[in-house]
Length: 351
Image (cartoon, rainbow, N blue to C red; front, side, top):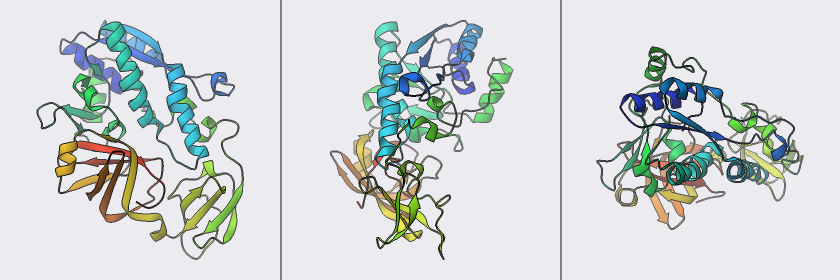
C-alpha cells in the first residue's frame, strides 16, 4: 500500500530489491471537506508521488476507490464519536476496517496478491507462540503498533512491515541513496481526510448541540462551554475557567450537554476498561503475570496487570494512575517483550 510518503515508498523499494513481485496500491478516499461529505472542498490523500515512485521501481500501480467504505467506516464514525462526547482515533479505524480489511481483501481477490505490505513501523514475527505475533517496531520514537492492534489474527500471516527493524533516519537515508522521488517529503501529522488541517473542520456543519454548562465535580455550574466537540477528557488548555488549582476535563455528558472539570486526581485512574476488544494472543494475555499498556499513542507503555478479560471487555490495572484516560481512545496492552496482545476502545465511566 503506497500513500505517496517516504515510508511506504521505501517499503516498496526494499521489497522490490529483495526480489519480490510488487504491486503498488494507493487508496482514493473522500475529504471530509468535500461535497460528498457535506463540505465544499474536495481533497484526498492520493499523492502523485506514489505513482512516480512506482514508475521508478518498475512496478504496476493502481488507485483503488474506497470512498464509500472510508466515508462510512472512518469519517462517519469520527463525527458520531465527537457528537457523543468521545475522542476517536480515525487512524486505528482506517487500519482496522480499510487498509487491512477492505483493501487487503480486494488485493487478494482481484489481483491475487498473497501478502500486503505497508510502511508502518511495526513487526510481524512468525517464530513465536500463537504465531505469528504483532510486535512493536524497533524504533521506539516511531513505533506504530498502537494503531495496528485491531488487525484480525487471521490476517497477520499475510502482512509485511519492511520498516519494522529500522529507524526513521535509516528510512530517509535509503530514500536518498536510491533517489526516490519522495525522499525529502515531510511526514504527515494531521488527519488525511481533513486536508492536514484542524480536526474541527472535518466535523461537519453541526458537530454537536452547541454551548452548554461547565460543572465542577460536585455538579455546580461554574461556566459555559462552546460545544462538547471542542473538548476531550484530560484537556487543560483552553477551558476559560479560573480556579485556584489547574483544572482538567474529567467527564463529557452529551445527553446533558455538559462538561465537568476537576483536579488532576479526579482526571486520573488506575483501572482502565475497554470494549470492542480485539485479542491477538489470548493464551499469552491470560497467562501473563505482568503487562504494559498504553492509553494513547504518544505514551511510553506503563506497567499494568490484567484485571478482567471477557467476551468484549478488557480491564487492566496500572501500577500508577493514568492521567486523562479518554473514552473513545484505545487501550493497547503489550507483553514484556513488546508483543501486542490485544486492546479495545476505552469505555466511559469506572471499570
